[in-house]
Image (cartoon, rainbow, N blue to C red; front, side):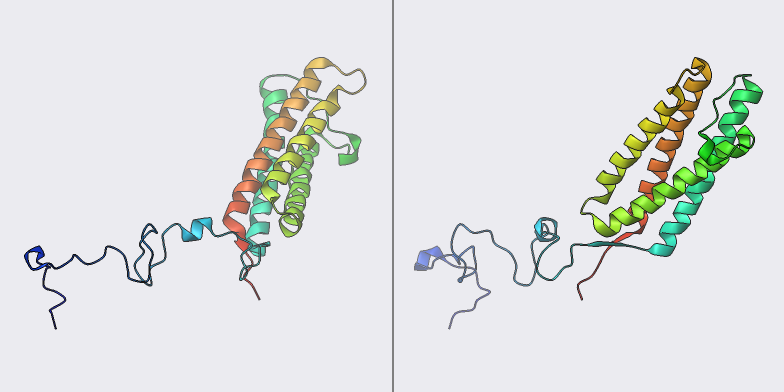
Length: 194
């Protein structure tokens, strides 16, 4: 019996060992036994037989991020009114009366917080019910922001206060979208199969 560790010697008519395992046909990629290819996980679909394709959330962390987003949105409303009215001496159109009729400071703070809260609820429901929640959420926030930014121009408004209100809505929409999608990326999980 020959030593398997001895190199082959072509002078005695020995053939080199095959470059592939004996059970593997020529032309197929070689993979060490027990070592899956590195890209197998990347090409395996989420809906493979042993996995549940639905998404879930780390609920506590998600709502903590949503509360922080509400705080930031409220502060954006306060800062906008302060900068525009106190620093630049400009008037800003108040949000619709459904948000209350208090001072501009309080109204814009409440508007920012309510907008962030409603957005968080929408995102939460989308994660639980849709296949691509981030895409749907982006569209919902974009369309809601466009509508709210156009709202100050309804009727016959003064143009400068209406433009300033529209800008504040755009800033609020952008901030809420970026903060909530960032929160989602840190709290979304794949539900394991049961």
